[in-house]
Amino acid sequence: MDDKQQERARQLITQLSQGNYQEAVTYFNRQMREALTPGELQNAWHILENLHGTLQRQNSTRATYLAPYHVIIVSCTFTNRELELHIAFNAENEVSGFSFHQPQTVTRPADEQISYIQAESFIEKEIEVGTGEWSLPGILTLPTGEGPFPALVLVHGSGPQDRDETIGPNKPFQDLAWGLASQNIAVLRYDKRTLTHHDKIQLATLTVQEETIEDALAAVALLRTTAQINSQQIFVLGHSLGGYLLPRIGTLDSEIAGLIMLAGSYRALEDIIVDQITYIQSTRDVVVEEEQQYLRTLKEQAARVKNPQLPLDTPTSELPFGVPPAYWIDLRDYHPGEVAQDIKQPLLILQGESDYQVTMEDYQQWQHALANRSNVLFKSYPGFYHLFMPVAGGKMATPATYTIPGHVHTDVIQDITQWIKAHEV
Image 1 (cartoon, rainbow, N blue to C red):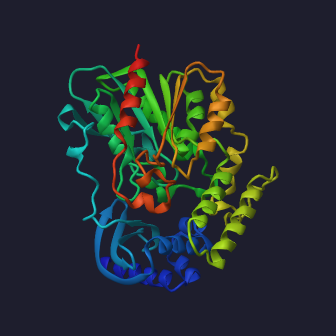
Image 2 (cartoon, rainbow, N blue to C red):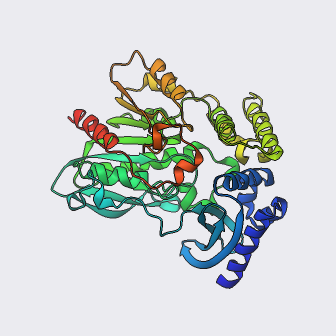
Image 3 (tube, rainbow, N blue to C red):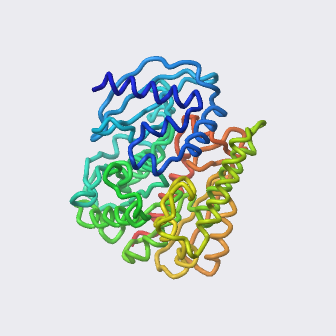
């Protein structure tokens, strides 16, 4: 089977490099075809080429198994960089997902060189979040000693994220877990449902309740019954989409001790998507007509989301990023700032000033919405981008920034530590 899948993976990459996007999507399973149209696939490939140059050749391949998928890893040479394309196949030999990665020889700065990581001060235990068909594998990073310790649940951004929220060569959730556990704060992180159970999720009816919220609440519930954890001192940290949903999570579990928002969006997701693509195109010297048309189409799709009469049977091809209508309809009446005004938990809201995904506009709107609350602390970091790592020269980040190995900055670890300890009872 590996030989056939390796050949099929190479064929898919060839189709992409030759611009045969209609043919390329025929390799996908149903969920992938619903989520990624030929036009969106074209735009993603163009972005990749603008960052790394054109594909020069395909090199070696290797196979691995990441239950329940067989993953073929193809080493590729682009004009400006070596990349690995990871292509996941299901049991029917259909492509169930693909992603781009730095070669394994490219690593982040060594963990032992990061001052806030004290490896001897914590241990890690494999755990399961939730029960039944949607249970998720994860890790509890537990300080050494008897406890009981305050604890923090980490809630991912958008997309099928793993427990470390791995993005390119970086693992911000691992940094947070190891850094905070070094300061006697237990941290629970887990693989996202859309990663672990991708093949059986019904995308047509998926909402953020199933994608994010249910599992975050299950993680909190698990910690409340875990030895060495102070059940009255369980906090939740949400990054990006996770931050956007924090007020909703806090409403559903009023016993959560506090909420920490890292680059939590305030504006509607469809508006943020349009702004992100607009910004990315503005950073390039040449924007081809196909990309310009994609942005025009995206704006039309975002406007369609705002239609209060948006039908549930709207084709996903008519909506941003192929996300089904149920997802957008669920978020239509969700205004995070208004919800956050009514929850009782203290809030820590952190923002990188060089972040183009969630911007200072979002941060300022949070400040305005919560100006009357006394138990909210705000802090922004000049020169930090979406992963709370510094951008070279302090400039606004670009997609290329995410390919640079780094670690969450020590200031962020210290600020979160101080805030949690200030709210211990």
